[in-house]
Image (tube, rainbow over the protein chains, first blue to last red):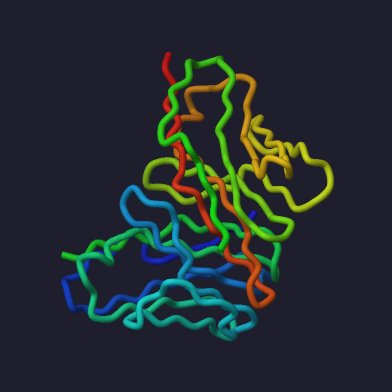
Length: 111
Length: 115
């Protein structure tokens, strides 16, 4: 069965640089979620989209923005990167409010 | 606010022994509850979920969990642990807001399996 695809899987950036993470949901899923998991931490909800509109917002820094496109893929844009942004970023998708299925994550390292 | 507590940070179980991982939640309405498993450096795989109905739910890999409303608990169990079960286990509650659901995770329990 098709799963959630995230790219890139690994990303290394310098402080103050910009990063873009991409997420391709399971086919026919209309809702996308982004989570951030710091080292040794539990995943924290950042933001979600339903039918290309933002549906909920968590503890996402103002330096981050995200959107969902007409093909339902989503991108998380992160600017002015800080050391503390180093984390595993997960995307999950669902069919409206049904079960969320997670992608393999993008490991972002900020040097 | 919604919250999930996993009181055990680490648990070590001998291979073949039974397992129970504890999870307590705080949520005002009927919760949607989940268990996910994460191997090192990997994504989160859904083990099982509870939305409504039968309070004993079966999942993949021989896992089961029981929802007990009176105790606000959703403990995960497995009768016989295999070495491949060593991983981090996260309990989560689906928190509805604006009609949509975000997951609130517990801090996780790391399972170690001894020979």
